[in-house]
Image (cartoon, rainbow, N blue to C red; front, side, top):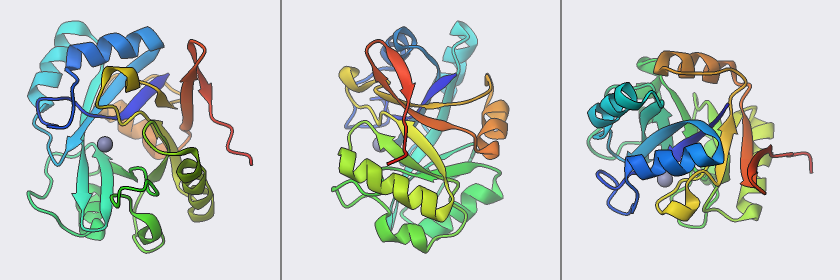
Length: 209
Ligand SMILES: [Zn+2]
């Protein structure tokens, strides 16, 4: 199944123009089987998303995009997070203590919010977002090279803030996941693949270049 693993909903991401029901509608039409809401430094949508999933049956996983002192990290499967900025390592350690997973968001995007060379320094990161819907192809290819070199899982996500971007990139999960427990179990096996939407379907990104 395909899951968009990094998306912003407008209630808690002030730079987003998207409401959850619209995100699900567009995502489903593209073929997504689940979505992840990862708002900036907030997990405020948790309760709403839980009720939404109970009502509709469509899995919405709420994580966070945390702006650490070294750059953005997306985490899922956690309950608590720092209320102020802490180092990337401190955040990763907190995620691991809670049994969650985390990946570097757009590590080489030119907005000074990627981990960049800190990727080589931090310990415990699970993966890298090698396909990001708002990042240049060069920066995506560089991320893929680092993922190979550092032996990190590779993910794709839209990082959407507007309707046109919902689901433009996604991550292929080789098993169906309906709950956060299942999501984490499959994620930790690391067999996901980055994908992009084109000509009406998702394509696995071939990173062999
Ligand atoms: Zn983001």
